[in-house]
Length: 120
Length: 113
Image (cartoon, rainbow over all chains, first blue to last red):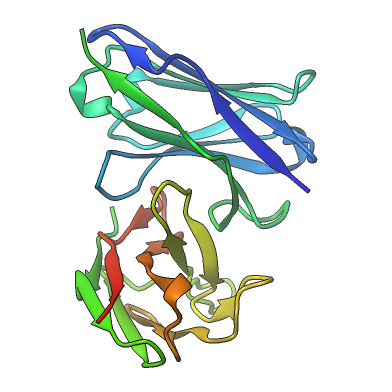
C-alpha cells in the first residue's frame, strides 16, 4: 500500500522560497512518475511539475522560472522548491503518483496535502 | 495548453437519479500511438485529495463502484453516475493527459436536490 505524506512550513513570507517534502512509503520513488499539484482554497487544480527516475523533470511553463523539483532515493523523498513566492502561490499542495510504473499523469495515489499560505 | 471546459458548474440531483457531467477539450485527446483518449475523471470531497474514478475516458479505476461510468472520445466526454448516492456528493473534475501540461476542468459540484 503506497502512502504519500507532504511536509514543510505552512507559512512563507512573500518573495521567499517555499520548500516542501513528499515522503513516500510502500513504493520506490525510482520506479514511478511523481507529480506535484496545487489547489487554491475553493478553486481548481493546477499541475506544477513531474519528476521521474534519477531526476528527469517536466515543469509547468507558468512556474518553470521559479521551480525546482528533486528527489533523494536513499530516503525515498521528493522535494519541491518554489522561489519568490507571492500570495498567488497560497494553496494546498499535493504530491501524487500514477497508476503504475508506466503511468505519468493518471494520478491514483495522492498525499493528504499541505496548506501553504504566503503572507507577511 | 489544452483547455478543459466542464458543464454544468453545479448539478442538483435527487437521490437515486442519474447525474451527467460533460467535459470538452480544446484539442483532441486521442493518442496517435494507441488510439485511446487520454482523459480522466476525479472525485473530490471536502478536505480530501482528488480520487481517480476513470482513466482512458471509460476505464474504471479499481474499487470504483460500477454506477460511475465514462464515455466519449476526441474532444467530448461524459461522466455518468447512474443512481446518485448520498456519498457521491462532491466536486468532479475532468483532466487531460494527452499533452504537457496536464490540465483540469474547472469542476462540477454535484449536490442532492
